[in-house]
Amino acid sequence: MSEQPARFHLGKIVATPGALVSIPQPEIFEALYRHERGDWGELDQHDVAENERGLQCGLRLLSAYTSMAKVKFWIITEHDRSSTTILLPMEY
Image 1 (cartoon, rainbow, N blue to C red):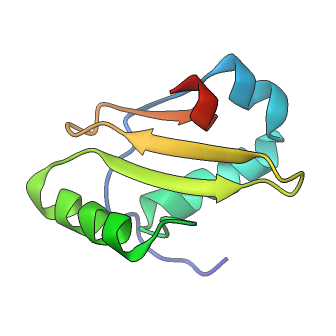
Image 2: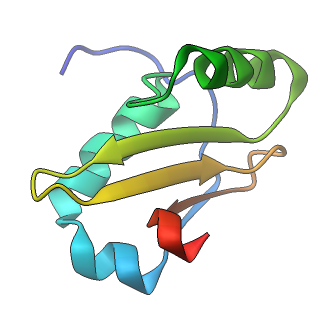
């Protein structure tokens, strides 16, 4: 991974039970690293644009990733940057 500065603060990091069971910890850490640097993962252009706007306007930020075991998961940082949640889409 290249050393890029974080674009925002993650706040308190929490994860749902499903995410903790389904995604290996190193993959969670890698995804958090990518998320806070603006690598939104597997989002379409519209959602990428929404995140970029969210950085400027203080909106919620969403990233989508797939683990090596093909488990899809999301990372959501709240609008006030107080917390970031790792979760499976079905847990939303």
